[in-house]
Image (cartoon, rainbow, N blue to C red):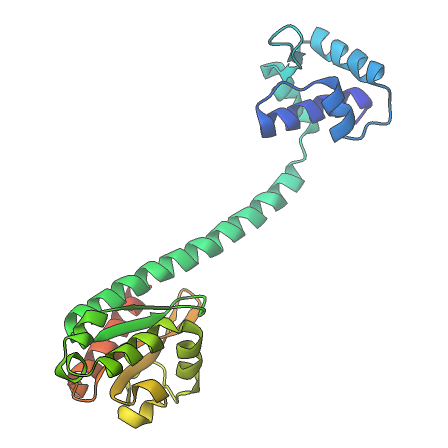
Length: 239
């Protein structure tokens, strides 16, 4: 690629990125041409005579013409480099899409669990750094907590301390795809020994996490376990 072609390529690439007319000084500074400003201006004048660039206003820089773009596409563009960049960007966006898709399914599942169990439902999100929960009001309405504000506040503290809650779930002997029941003191969460957990592990869109319900020891365990297993089966079917 000779100097004139490199200048044309620089003008087109810069205009693609900025949508602003490109001046000789910009070309010289941004693309590190080892020539004088006068040489850049001379080459740009030649490109303009050849109909490859034009000046939209007096005192403005130049922008490519359709003919300039055609020459760029046919002779100057690096399609192999562009292909690698496209692959990298698609992989990046696709990974983000997978996380968003998984989160959406988790949000729906937790919402369904909260409505059907009438307890707190929760799940660790795909990045496993945060716990999403719903239905706190369900538990606070239970006699055990409405008559004991301290126990109620302890439940809230545990759920809001995401890092600690996720860490504790990791210490429990939880079997994947099966509802694991931890009653009262068995749940090892010091501040909520007045509660029980029904929890399982899930795999979704390549991510691992925990999902379950938290409620008073007086909860309906068979029903809660069935709900957790059904909802895990449901999100797997839509995976």
